[in-house]
Image (cartoon, rainbow, N blue to C red):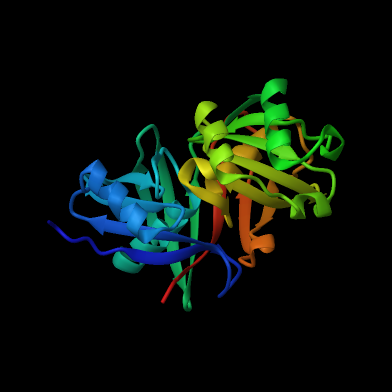
Length: 279
């Protein structure tokens, strides 16, 4: 059986600490799907990105320990850093299962700066019955919600739910049963559930449940971040063209995600951050 080299990086790191670990496999051809699934399970990170050159772009697939996902932001940032390390600074075109995007990367000392352009975004109000299910699972109630940001289905290459809470302390006590969360997310075809708190109109704190992938919580979730930015645009949130997300603090893995938001409805979101190699 062919062996594959897995590079391990932390994406959206806070300088030399924090971030979300991702595996990256770059090879001449992609392994078979079941082989990629096994590699991702062995790596054990929330996602591993697999990339192979295909003419003038890179064919990319993403696997969590339990399933394939259509798009993963932090693994894309890690891939951008790995491509920059291998081929030099620049912008790289990526062909995903359902979209084509770009990622850029450049080395900056011991770190890498990387940015992706997400797939198009869209959003819709979340069904009240789904919201009730989520609140019950996480032990929240309607009084915990921020009415300025109603619960919604949000998309940017994958489907998520956003639930805005009205204070930081409520966000800090997020907890739930992994198996029940997996069943709910799979039944509703959700990749993650993002709980957010707005410290300012341009700065959010986020906790992201990823039971669909077998992970209790993700310390940085670029795909959900892009979808969230698109939703903020849809509801005419005063983002002034840029929003920063702080994620992973409650896990001891502080991560920073920067987003640039154009005024065009549904347009791609630029998501950027720092990446570092793990020893």
